[in-house]
Image (cartoon, rainbow, N blue to C red; front, side):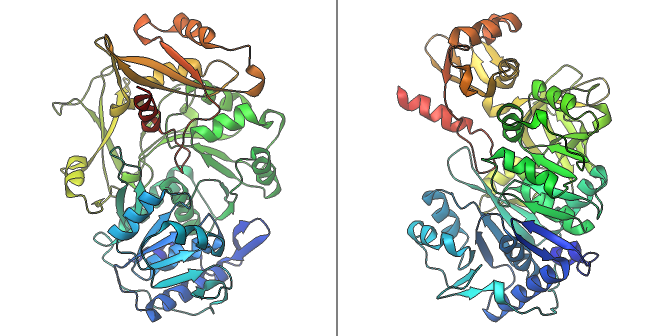
Length: 503
């Protein structure tokens, strides 16, 4: 099974638009024809099965064609975020021996200034002086190479490692197809679904929508302008989108920095959240705002291709704060350090098993060995369960604060701070303290007109009403924005590093 062939086998002839991007659209037959033409051109350029080929582009139809063309030829796609640091870019390009690059012409100067490795082949999105312009490639039928779907890597997704070195998560053709089938099943996706895509394709959560919607013959609306949330909301209605998905930061911004409360979204069928734990106050706001929509709270990891669990919308109120149970085909268990299952109320690590679990980390056998044990993924995420087996995330093990002999979850404190209406974002970390080991510090982002209404004392007093003394922040710092990754996740390690450098 070749993943590209499998995903498009029932949709490639559909007489409908596959993608919308601003004023540009492309139909399924034209999209498939371009993908096949890319496969042929890669062969003409001497690209062999297993060669690593990078994509340096913002979300676009060009990116989609490149992505599926690379995989379709039996090569390994490496989607890169265009704002990747020079250090990480060179680490990936050199380590993976990348010689072929799909790049948007407008990004060529930036890439050449940062990358120290010379490319052999460039593929551009528009006419260029050198390289190959895939926008003019002819449509052509092609034969897909045979693939051992469980053994051969389709994509390497690089994530920020805790040591500062990017981790390359290798997922196979089978991993992606398996996860896509699971997601399609529980979201009940069909060819009538049209999804608003604001997540980067260099992020597994973003590409998961590519896989699912192409497989069912749905449609995607690409919008790269979330810095103007009102424009995104406008387009959801203009394009009559049935689905929208984001990480916590997206929903926090929409709920606190946009006029979403004054709008109606008649076409929306579902809203999906993953990419970190959305605080309960925001979930409650979504429930009040969209009583007639399906709200899916989900949990996943790049190492699991994309998705691991979901909470059925009808259980949202009853199991508020839960990430649900494993998605179809995925088994989740929460174990103590001695390997025994936890009881309700106890805390342990989530382990996952299923056909979506990665092959391993690129060029990192030690890291792979620590993370994959007996075919199971050790997620590093701590959770508890209730009497019915529903999971509730506690925190990442590496984020737990050890203060005065207590183990404190930053998310518990953040959840309290998020109850303050004028707070948009909050992140809590441990900072070095000679007596406590670590003292608790909260970074807070508020709406602009909250100045003078909310200060350090207000935050501390608010926390004191709901938390025991050992969980009260000692320090509070107000900042304009929290540092975030390309996928809009809060980068706690950056905050910790900044604090260490102050000493």
